Image 1 (cartoon, rainbow, N blue to C red):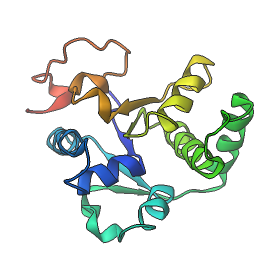
Image 2: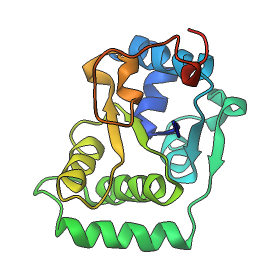
Image 3: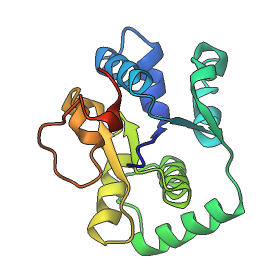
Image 4: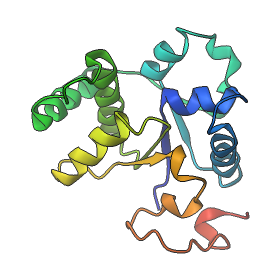
Length: 170
């Protein structure tokens, strides 16, 4: 099973800010991915967004795999934007473009999951693209609470057998 996750900026902010509504859930997902040795990817795009408000050194960087944004990611992002047609009225153009770039990185790098607190943009556009059947990447929303079964790639969100050798020891 190829389980890995791309970390959205909103997840990272919730992870390090104890005052955020979904901090505890972000911390649970972080601990789970560490314990299960699920690779966590930290995009240069998320680094740029995060660094606007605080230094990226506030993050547990040694536990993340760096993911640079490159030309194939840019081409994939353009294809995804074209598949969408346009963004919804009222959605911030820059935020949507960054979200699409993150989704494109996940698609190109074959990262099956993106974890986010952003239900109004990243999650929405990822789901829209999934419904258009142009990608298989799934966004995990913190607002839905902690549920380790979301890491199943087969879309069966039932019980996850944590004693399964694919998930290590829980």
